[in-house]
Image (cartoon, rainbow, N blue to C red; front, side, top):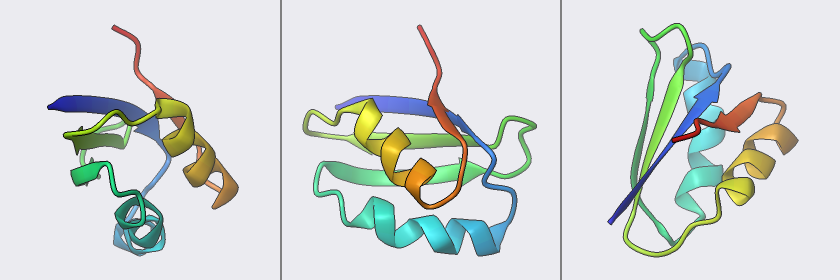
Length: 72
């Protein structure tokens, strides 16, 4: 199991609803959530398969959101 962590600008539940279909369409994602209370609007993704972080970044950026993987 892998956990990927991203900094985003997904600011509210309406924005979460907008990214939901993007993330649920990725079969490698088992679970995900956005911490709207965190100043960095952290997106955490649980994956049981290899998931390229750039694919997640690209999907959210195409939808108009900032999304950058947090480094180790």
